[in-house]
Length: 158
Image 1 (cartoon, rainbow, N blue to C red):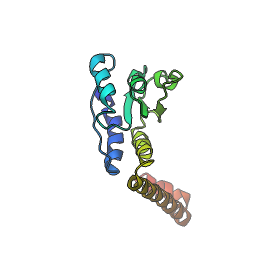
Image 2 (cartoon, one colour):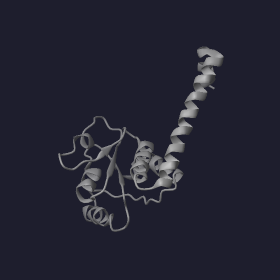
Image 3 (tube, rainbow, N blue to C red):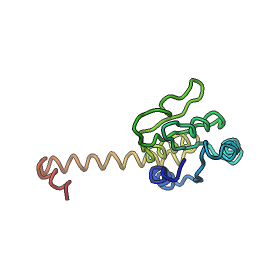
Image 4 (tube, one colour):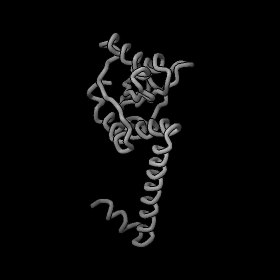
């Protein structure tokens, strides 16, 4: 997407790096450089791409057109706008997996889960990631039990 999408897209990149997944990142505009965009999406499969994560403003042309050209999964990240047009209204037959608004981190995790379907090592990393999140929640619950909600709230404000 646009360079203004970079803070959100960087979240996906950070997750992919965490799981040791190779990726490329670029800035392409479906509107301003359609020939470049078309060639990028058309050649992605032959370049070894298995999943494309694309940012989407109101119109959602980037992930939508990627999904129309690229035969493998496309994950669209809706960028925060004044309404939910675009990506939530893809035409029948051109699916785009959509994560939360500004959900770069979830896009990275979803891409890792898609790739883990055929990568046992990556699947184990995802299982360890989920276990770590579970342990963190259990630790927070234990702290709440030990100190009570008022002190817990006070500790969150620090």
